[in-house]
Amino acid sequence: MTTSTALGATITGWGTALPDIVVTNADFEARLDTTDEWITERTGIRERRHGGTTASLAVEAGRKALEMAGLTGADIDFILLATTTPDYQIPSTASQVQEELEINGGACDINAACSGFVYGLVQAHGLIAMGLKRILLVGAETLAKVTDQEDRNTAILFGNGAGAVVLEAVEGQGQLLSFDLGSDGTARELLDAPIGGYINMVGKEVFRKAVTVMVDSARTSLSDAHLTSDDLALVVPHQANIRIIEAACSRLDVPMDRVAVVLDRTGNTSSASIPLALVDAIEHGRVKRDDNVLLVGFGAGMSWASAIIRWTGRLPEENA
Ligand code: COA
Image (cartoon, rainbow, N blue to C red; front, top):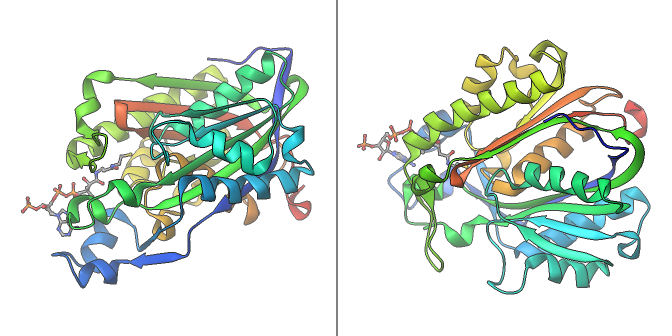
């Protein structure tokens, strides 16, 4: 979809949170039938974080994003919280974050698995097109609690974390040039976790489908924005496996020096992974004014999402 509204949005603040407990590949090597070498070669992951609650991580990331935007919770009209690992079945984790950050207006969770942050980004733009002025969008996860820590197939992959952005209304199109959201419910059994249970995953099949849907979705967003991959300054992919990222980016003809990667330090943090990688790239000076940035993810569902942002918004002073 190409965006065409009188009211667009721009990102004016961002923040992240990672819990303190670092779980290294060596920690798994010590107690599971696995090795640091296998995990690093097959996934690119070296460590991930455990601990925290989804709300506590979301509050920390959200507070940083508000501070950077020079706002308080009272200035926010709506909080959208993308998560697959809410702290409670009822109510939404967003409602707890709303209380702690003293946010006005509506609050709800979005579950589109690892595509959740990009789904939320597009939904935030929709709310802004309807007249809301400022939205806090958070991706926050505590995947360690839904991962069987004795299962070498999944334990090594998933971690906890959060990333948040503040979106503010601007006249005209704003930052979002195009987006593509999709889901294939027939593939939902490839990755699921029953209520109260652990993640089950058909890893090889998820891998294969992930590369296909990322590439197709990215191409759709590029074409809708009348861009080619040469026009992309940065790709921020979902951080699941370095080999998935490399395969998808190779098919898109994007060299890895234009790709944001944090999974070596975070593992797969589902809804938090794209904002964690985006903020890392911004803070390392990898996003400049008017850069085209592609966000692209996939996840359980099987869901996928991509969005192209032209970075007209805030940047750290030295890059502006
Ligand atoms: N350490 C050592 N061996 C392991 C292992 C581990 N941590 N995990 C799995 N293995 C074994 C398997 O049991 C299998 O053994 P077998 O041949 O005796 O059955 C062997 O390694 C090869 O497994 P395979 O599934 O072919 O490995 P792979 O190269 O596909 O890598 C994944 C496995 C899970 C890393 C990979 O498939 C993947 O990343 N898939 C996508 C998962 C994903 O992104 N999920 C989140 C979606 S949002």
